[in-house]
Picture 1: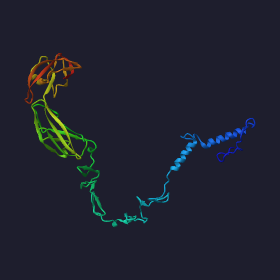
Picture 2: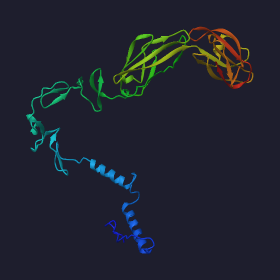
Picture 3: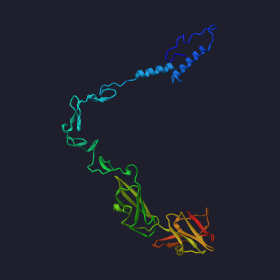
Picture 4: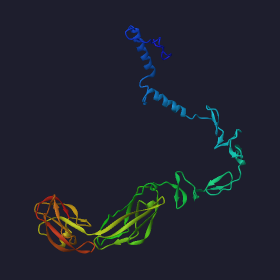
Length: 372
């Protein structure tokens, strides 16, 4: 058996073999084999690691170990490595006197000494601090004053024009408030009709809003809205317009946190378009007003559905000022013929020329028509 790794094998343990003289015996081969196995077991797999040789690896480890700076207890540290103590602060010694409850560290000129707080020198306060020697009040942050407002649960300090104000951190400080304003009567009114103190519905993505008011581009004075009515309210004004596409824009204003937000809604005064089924050959403004269906619209682009039974034509009428109308029925253009323009007076006394069209075929059943 080899002595390695407990001892180093000698030439007696591993004798020299001489060609043509030393007999080849199993014991000689086995000694070499055992020695090789002992070396491999001692060194393990890949003993050189990431180095080029085992020696290079050992040299690198020795260099690393020699470069390690071991902790020494000096400067502000004392006692033992297993139980170190802070004996100084930035090179200034701390007294070994045992402190009692309420003591503070006072610099004596040579050391930090535990001492009752009542012995601290008087402090009058300046800059961001105010108060007596033992109870100071922070009245500013880096020169910006703090408003004297009693904080509530959830308040944070919000800087407003150089003053830190205790307030809620509103979502609007992170993302914009979204408001919507919707006229309950709709956004289209027939020309000549009067919109009396229009009512509105409003919505807000954030709840804590204040200073609500509504105004319009016809009147300069905003009307205040009580907070309790912020979701449903009315304007005190009334409006009437006599020309197609006349409009009034309403603006809702509110304060979220410290930021003013606005939402708008526009109401348009417009004419109707008319359609329906009747016997072929009908004409005139009075006939247009008798058609079964109508809708308010700002433009000539519209889609409607009509039903013509056997022997009936489909009629359509709109403002002559819309110009030529293109009809699309089931994806195909055409199918209607212009009859004539007629002077029509609507329900509110507004007079305007209307163009009348008739379908080229009767008995079409239910069809969907798009005008443009």
